[in-house]
Image (cartoon, rainbow, N blue to C red; front, side, top):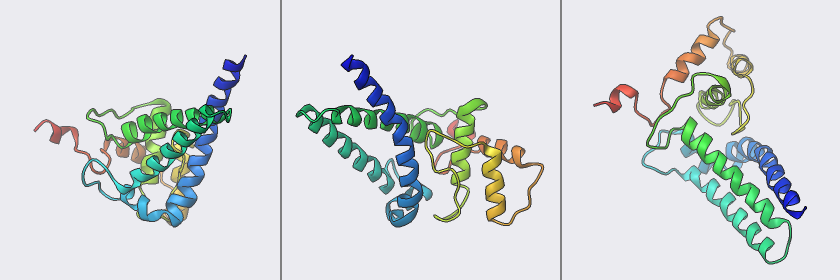
Length: 185
């Protein structure tokens, strides 16, 4: 029965972490923590960026929680394990799929992964920290809603080609990566 509780705590923590990460992204990273996060909205120079320090901070917190839990403060180790699980999902989805910081490239063409990819591309469509949309990492609102919000915020009229623009953006590699044609050279 305890294993069931522990598993539930890990899963619940992963779910809650999406809310925590969304809040932190919107109000800390795009607020007083912009100094670190700016590197993520700029062309990357090298394998790492200052923004990666946020992952280090969350990882250290998870390690402290796991340690405290193993020293007898149940259920902290399971909360730390859930934070670690969320970190792994974040690494796979955000760093791997969306920003393609891995040696292989995959751009989703349909389904939820495409929606997630497009939502984050729309987040980066705005230069600077103000006026961005879609601050989540594993939840993505519908792309059409995000496009409408961006058009309303930036004074552009709604266009019939908005979905076509989103598909065109999906075919464009994220900044800091090479196009398929240039990789063949």
